[in-house]
Length: 118
Image 1 (cartoon, rainbow, N blue to C red):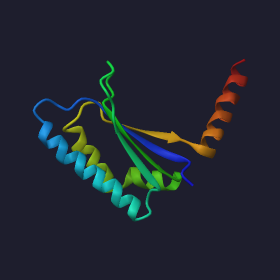
Image 2: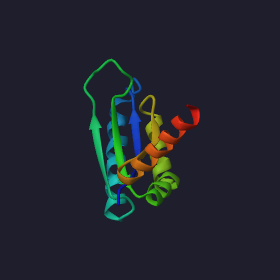
Image 3: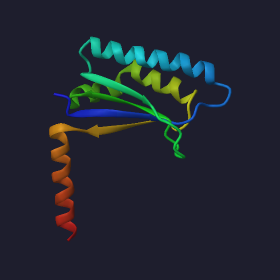
Image 4: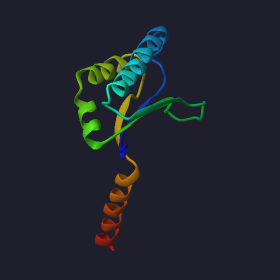
């Protein structure tokens, strides 16, 4: 069950790297598709954002189990894709995401912290 994820966000393309950024983007989407086809992730979505005055230009949300997300983060191909991506876009980052049942657990942790600080 996809109760965990990885949020991969990026900012503007590095000036002068526009054409290369398209190549890297295609390679990354191909990698995510392969991870899904191999059953190493459950699914993924990719989005480009309209101009909004912020630093975030687009993101991918990779979904799977906690074990799958842990494995993806240490996968050499995934790590290599991040290295290549950082050379063509600004502000590239990966953040763990909690969804479904995992979201409930995170909310309990938050509620406990509120109670502890009250």
